[in-house]
Length: 67
Image 1 (cartoon, one colour):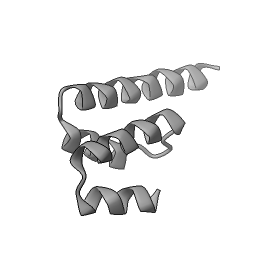
Image 2 (tube, rainbow, N blue to C red):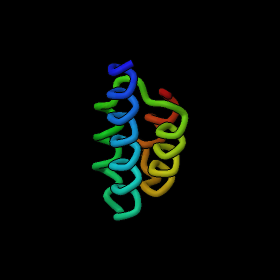
Image 3 (cartoon, rainbow, N blue to C red):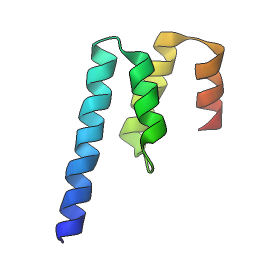
Image 4 (tube, rainbow, N blue to C red):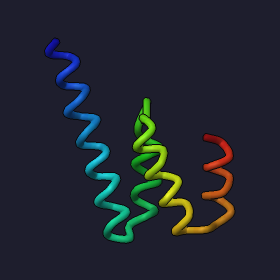
């Protein structure tokens, strides 16, 4: 049970950081964080898509295609 709680807290921390980067227009940092996350959930993937829309570059388009 302790391991599951640790995973949940760590995962929520990633979601919070990711959202904070997006809200503060630090989209490149958000993409870097996404690349570090080993098992992103649906929430983080949706946040990533929103981030990619803000950038609108070919690199972000390729990243969304990859996912």
